[in-house]
Length: 161
Image (cartoon, rainbow, N blue to C red; front, side, top):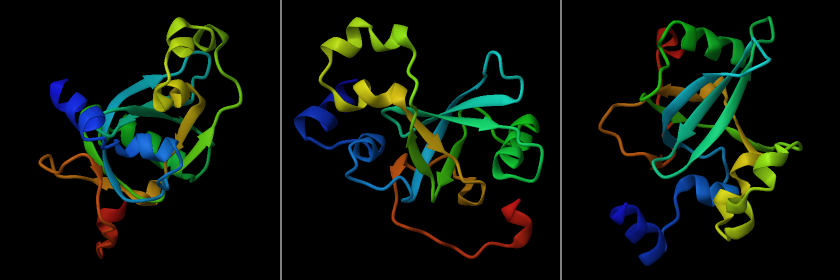
């Protein structure tokens, strides 16, 4: 916690997700993220919520089965095959960030939301990370989390899927 406090408040270095939510950075830039959690959504048997972390904060992405050959279906099959699991580091490129119109009224009226002036904490429930299947690949365990220089490396076709 001390390291995080020193970096964010003393040295004024914001995390990647914080820069993205404040629109100072594009969500499509290359970053290494951690799969912080995978949860099945209640009421939607074919929907999964994936929590992605940049080391400081988390954003959620919702994957829905569309019954075809879409990117969400491919990502869901990788999750079912345990090829993507919580604790795994992944490279992300060309992701999108969208706002959810409906916010849970209980979360909207909570004391934390009213008392905080922290931009990311105030906006995190309203933002959704859109995952692009072709822009995700496995990262090595020693790679640091957060933004990286753009690295488009040639890949064999068998490594893409």
